Image (cartoon, rainbow, N blue to C red; front, side, top):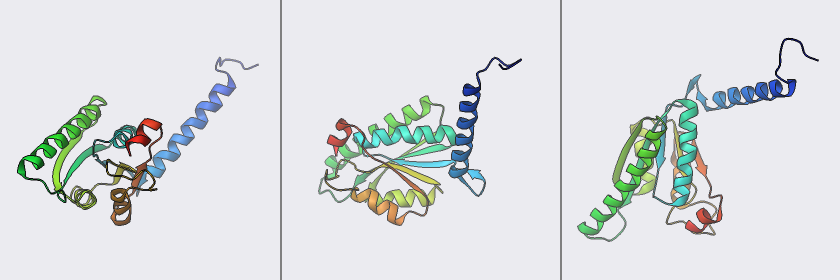
Length: 178
């Protein structure tokens, strides 16, 4: 029987193990002794991207990071100006929705909507804003359900100079979105 301490030993051991795991995770997420402070979250509005946002928020909360939200209006689409304006407006809505959710968690959010090739714009923004980690879904709205990795995610991991966390679809609704 323990004297003077009413906390069961199993609870104390569990808490100690949890703290050790958190310390390990903080160390893994640190770079040269400093935590990741700038995370890029590219979104295309897909369910997989929305799921990746949850991971991004969790990571930002645990590291005290700010989040840069990016939507790219793909310039390869053969649309007139009004069609591109509609896509930009939809992109702005995706970004604003994500920023609102991020800010509800007390995290600083920066929003950007640009025209271009998605993988290229992601890499460019990561470099220009000195992003320390990119968090994105494995597949977006253009992904093929049989592909192991979406083409944008594939190009990003091959060309990024910072770590990239790819978040896969986990439930049937998200998987069907691919």
